[in-house]
Length: 182
Image (cartoon, rainbow, N blue to C red; front, top):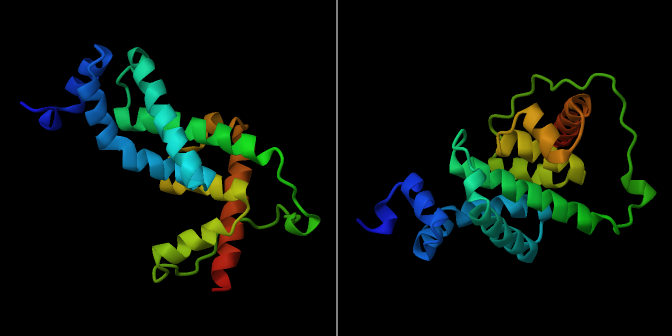
């Protein structure tokens, strides 16, 4: 049986034994998805590629800590997201924000309206998400695109549960306002 036809579980056993062909096969299976995940967060192709490769190295080094309670792909994605957020925060430390870009939002009604967005194309929606504040864009990506629940987002972004709920609510409202103007 060739490596390409083996299950991920058997490949991971070979990876733990240091089999480079098995590591290459695992890399080939997951590289595109992990690159896209990193790119959505850091918004830089070179950084996303570096993060993806470093995440694979980390995953292979810490493979013995993989318990199998989740899929390998979701475990690897968490490593990529954590590394991406760390890199994103590093790059944002020195970015100046003008006062024009800072908006005051109130806690009034942050519920999403009953508007029908079924006709809206996904590319348009992603473009609208890209126009949101970076924190809003990242939290909506983690929640809606990556599928993480509030507790997981709290861990990933190192924020409280209440802050997470508020940020998601505000991000949804901000996105809704942008969609209404379309």
